[in-house]
Image 1 (cartoon, helix red, strand yellow):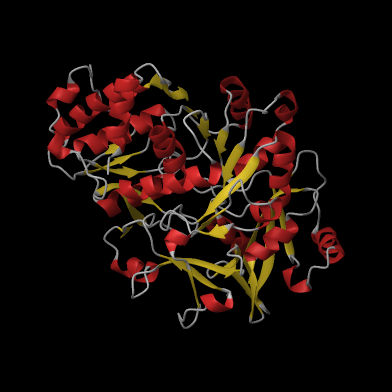
Image 2 (cartoon, rainbow, N blue to C red):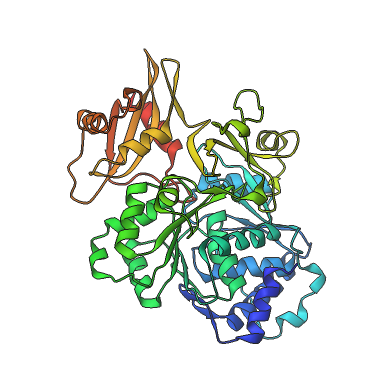
Length: 482
């Protein structure tokens, strides 16, 4: 099996002037390969021991991918840190991994024309070696550190090609933080493996994203749910065509079905997702062959190669045959290597017989369609009853004023916890109060256990470093308000 360095070097020979990256840090395949060689030589000079861990926190753009490729060639393990990570999170990750340095820009590399001749090929990482460390997205306190080998992302690439009918003729755009799993496959691996260009921005801005889609004829867009909702809410949307789009890959958090449907109606693209995590990679996927209900209202069909199981959350017994609900677990080629130097966390991640747990409660229908019904750690326990935050969010998000919603537990002296929802509104919408939301849900026939008891409206919901809604910050805020 090859490595990404081998893939990029081959593109540089066969199509030297072809576009590797457009937008922030635009470069050709030859430029990408030569810059990576030069940076690799500089890394070897500064960090002579193979396997040295080096942290990197760069703005999103081509420089980030040059560094990742250079580190592979130099035998340096990159500790990828998202550009939005705060000082406390950065310090934790650097200390946790024992990183020798923190890079915030590319090292001074000079001319890369002859750098390849100065690199020892034996230093380069193989496809199954530890190549990359990144963090969980930090929604529940200080993150753990996930270990990646390249082969998992080559395997993931094959799944993506199958689901989205991806080809070298596609033009990709990834507006995701590059050090996380979703950003890695949509910007670093799949476009390069196909030999297709990838459009990048130094940071996500709705108007700049819309401009770039039209300017570059983007066909495959990758964005978390909050980002594509922001595109729909942008006043600039009416001024753009977007007809080049054929696929939006989204996920990373709950996909709001009504907004995903609106995106399909507005652009003609199909909204697809992989259900999984930074750790598992993927358990299920939607594809172009799926109907709209499966694409937008479920997590798609289980992937046979991942051998998905459902486990009883209390006993660990296999409940797959009943369809669940149970904690989804899997084992396959797209799984990570586990957590870095963390026996306790690995004991929670893996079952004793080696299956990787997700922490999500799921059901699997007889036709193989998987639906996420809650998260074992994302519940509100009101008067002894477990209430799924995901279910509350799904229902509240149907209110016409709501653009984004997050449900968390608010401490309560009588019931222990009550349901508190945080709202980000659509442009120009009137903020709904508790009674308005309850009336809306009652009209939908939603049971009272899912009705919110506190409503907080924010200009924008806070984001964690991976781009997801920062529920840890919201829980802290709810505790303060209580």
